[in-house]
Image (cartoon, rainbow, N blue to C red; front, side):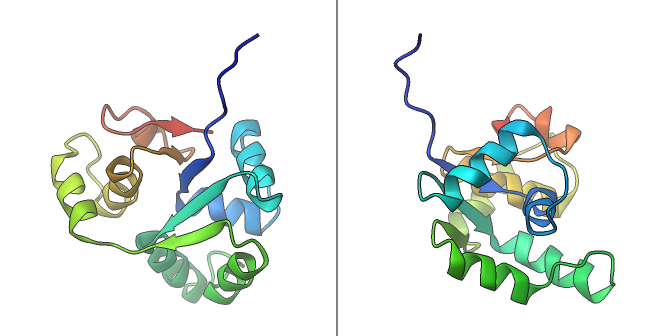
Length: 135
């Protein structure tokens, strides 16, 4: 039996947050993290780029989730917090060379800049040498 304390801070990508908000199936580890957040035992940071992607996908009617849905979730669960895009994130993104898509790289860079695991099912991000992931 390990005495290790489970990590209690994470970063969520767009798919992870949308799946949770739309009550759709996700990886068991990812679901466990969201359950811990909802019981105030962990914190999830939502990168600004995730909010931008949700705005875009919602406007295109590709997802049911809207920015209002995200806002309501964050109000209900204060351990789910937005994380602004800043210079440290941009600098971290500039060093990630194995995630070609810019939006994904910025999301991964948010996790990397804080040395946190990224909740994602994206195989390209999962294969990155620059970010730790959980699903």
